[in-house]
Length: 87
Figure 1 (cartoon, rainbow, N blue to C red):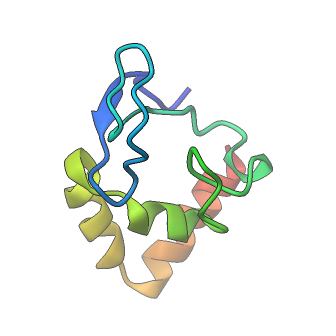
Figure 2: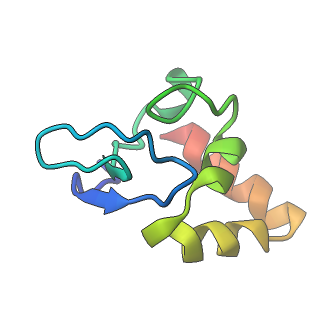
C-alpha cells in the first residue's frame, strides 16, 4: 500500500493543534499512496492543491525527505510524479 500506517511528527507547518486519540496536533498517520491522484486536494485539511505543494509543506520527521525532493532535478521530479500518478 506504500504506507507504514504509523503516526509521524510532520512539524509545525502542518500542525493543526487537534489531538485525536493517540495523535498530537503535529502528528499524522501516513496515508496510502495508492490512488493518490484521485484524492486532491491534498493533506489532512486540503490546503495543498498539488502533490508538490503537499511534499514541500512536510517538516518534522519528513524534513530530510522534503529537502531531498526539493533538490531533485527536473527530470527526476517528473519521473517521481509519473510514478506517483501510476499508483
